[in-house]
Image (cartoon, rainbow, N blue to C red):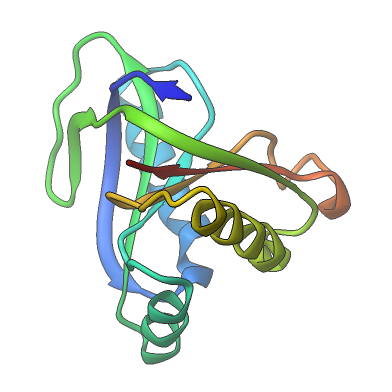
Length: 150
């Protein structure tokens, strides 16, 4: 599928995956304080190239974490928070339903499908969090996982 580029407000730092939620909170507080218009669900951008790399980086506490919210209109970054265009392009997508900590099966399916179809991941994978974990039961959480491909 083709995904359009999107203007986002985001935050990127090294850490552990358990920090994604608090990072999203930091960005949302920034957005709300400035009256920025959010036009879609938040996403996590995974910069490690393989599931094994991601697991090792997380265990070491130096995973490359990036969280973003899609926005419209004018906005400026400040400090660690930036405003930029998240690249679009051709992507494969798989949908995971359930707790975030159980996404591994979806990733396994995605990478198996990519190998079967002789496709290569060409950039960071992104997880888009479709519903809110504060108001949705864990088993009903929906995550769209996108991998840029060629």
